[in-house]
Amino acid sequence: MSLETGLESLKRGEFVLLFDSAGRENEIDMVVAAEFITPEHVARMRQNAGGLLCIALENNFAKSLELQYMHDTLASSSMSNKEMIMGLAPYGDYPTFSLSVNHYQTYTGITDKDRALTILEMANIYKVENKQKKFSSSFKTPGHVPLLIASEGLVASRQGHTEMSVYLAKTAGLTPVTAICEMMDAETYTALSVDKAEKFGKQNGIPLIDGKELLEYAKVN
Ligand SMILES: O=C(CO)[C@H](O)[C@H](O)COP(=O)(O)O
Ligand SMILES: [Mg+2]
Ligand SMILES: [Mg+2]
Image (tube, rainbow, N blue to C red; front, side, top):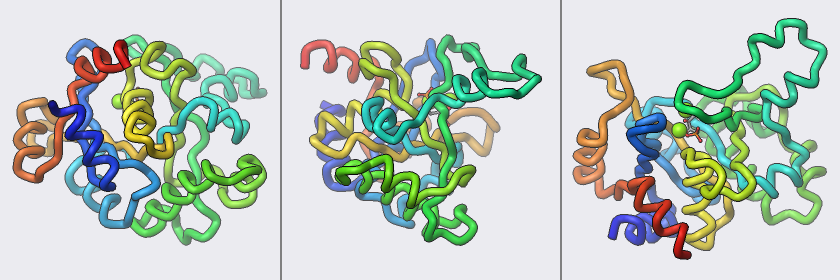
């Protein structure tokens, strides 16, 4: 069963591929638990996925850091061009974007080493008692890694890669913080197809988890 194989991979600090659904983004993200991230993971996501590398956070954790969705922050700001604020995407969901961050010990923030440090230190904050204090003293914004906030209720309320990847980390007994990046196709200039992702997964020993299977599992677990 790919979901259980996937959970084992995540526990070992390895990648899984996560497909949402044909009726949604129709995208496959490379996913790794943030607590295990290394510069090598970042380099592989950059080379083999090529989308936007983000950190997904469980809702309660994001709240403990006083994070808000960026569309809410902008809506309550003094900006005059509020018509620019992203609402529902064409596939029917609000974006999960919040702030983008760099760890304070990074240099430019974009190198594989810098992004791995930012991602790892975000996961480490989960284990700290005064999370908000540690977060505000250790990170700068804007930075080079976007933070995504998973919905309250996780996959029961939104079925994005944000929620599904955090759900996988939690189910694997890991810190509910993930690094995710969309897989792109440099031949077609579109998102990578499921067939191509399956082939890539087989060649590289990376399990592909179907969102449909994940949602069915979540209903009974
Ligand atoms: O847009 C995104 C950020 O790069 C990606 O789609 C990512 O998978 C998270 O978003 P979602 O939860 O909507 O799938
Ligand atoms: Mg997206
Ligand atoms: Mg997505």
